[in-house]
Image 1 (cartoon, rainbow, N blue to C red):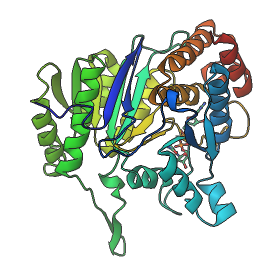
Image 2: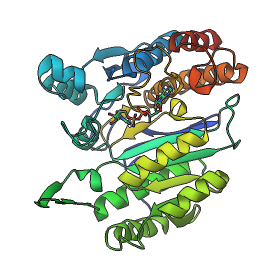
Image 3: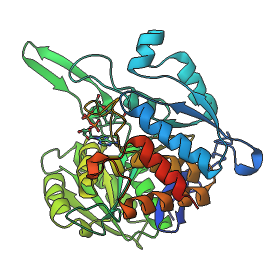
Length: 372
Ligand code: NAD
């Protein structure tokens, strides 16, 4: 018998049309996660982030306030702005806050290409062992895309792979990046994916790999997934090589349900999947561990539109709804999702990424008006 979700510290819930994972409030080591509704106002670390982060996270906070859920936000700086202010992109007060609240709503953080400090996102996910990155990708009524009815859950391993950041120069002109894959992390993420599938009434888990080339590393990932799959006979399991999977995703996305991926493939395939449903402005995300969670959109700092007030706030608002689910306010989360859907269906107050003229603030106000 498989280890249960509760034992794994994971509870998942099905709220109406939206499926999502939740981490248990009392962890299996007895330490407290976020407080429940009955215990009073939950304290959550709020990281506005860089680029469009403050604009879209501000939108999410406004909508959460409007839906009537009280949260004691502990605002903290991270990334480029924290480096300028405190001399570190991960100041001590940020880490202290996360250690105490164990839950955060986080905007995107800039990571320079080919230079500068290592990704703070990767650092935080590893520091707090937030091993499961969950990204629900769904077609939105009112958003015109080549496919309708896309409904895919991307589950990405968050702690290893090439993201271990082990790189060195072997000789001038020759560098080496080390890909770490362990049985422990591969088994843990596979079990998370199957538990998620079972609890959320999903029928198929597809492991995506390149084990034809990386026979040892991706081979190990697959062996672990196969072993776990045997414990979940009620859920179909299949494997696809990553390149072919990408082709099938853009020609017939309906053949997929839950995707199980290593870190790098998960990162790339998430953005591909976002493209299927209208772009990065629509896909929320969460990083879950045994002892906490960080909620963040799939999209980054969007430097090309930062400061213009035109970022699509939907991904951040829906990420806020996932946070509410986690805090035990699933019906408030559902009300937010319904309001977002109503605004998109009406199509009158939408941002330029989907052909509208509205600002982030206009669209946020429209979502708040649509709350029932
Ligand atoms: P990006 O996601 O920031 O932007 C890619 C494209 O999508 C851009 O054209 C952008 O304008 C558009 N876009 C993104 N979010 C949007 C929104 N809400 N509304 C409308 N359009 C939106 O990816 P990038 O440009 O490759 O990365 C920029 C920076 O963000 C990099 O420093 C990267 O490392 C960082 N990043 C951070 C995170 C994170 O913090 N979790 C995730 C991804 C990227």
